[in-house]
Length: 141
Image 1: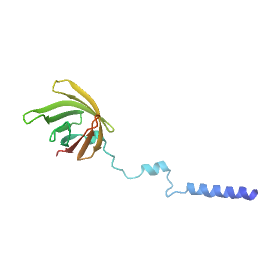
Image 2: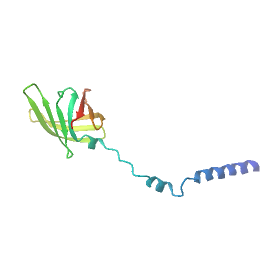
Image 3: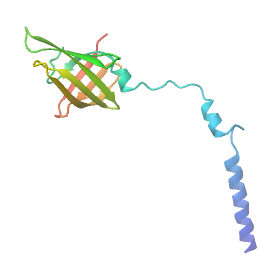
Image 4: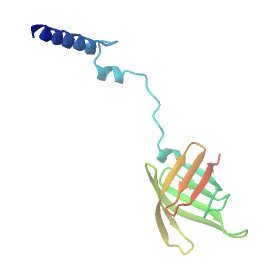
C-alpha cells in the first residue's frame, strides 16, 4: 500500500514538473501578448465598400452595379431595357454575413430586406436572396 502511495506521489510530482516547465519564464498571458502584431482580419462591413458589377444575376441585370459607401449609403444602378436605366438610392447595414438594405423603388417607396452574403472577397461578392436566388458581382476598379 505504501509503495502505491509513493508511486502515485512520484507520478504527481513528475506531472506537475512537466506542466510547470515552459520555453519562457514569462506567464502565458504575457507570452501571447508579446507575439508580433498579426494583421487583423477585414470584416464584411469593410470589404463590401466600393462599386460592384453584376456578372451572374437575377433580378439585377448583368452589368448593373451596386455601390456601397463607408457611411452606410448605397445605390443600385440597373437597366430595365435598352432605354431605361434605374438609379435607386438607399442605405445598408452589414452584420456578420447578413446584408440589410433599404432601397427606393420606382414608386418611390422604400423596400427593406435582409439577405445573406454567401461569399465576399476583395474581388467577388455573392449575395443569396431570401427567395433562394443568388447574384454574383465582381469589384470594379
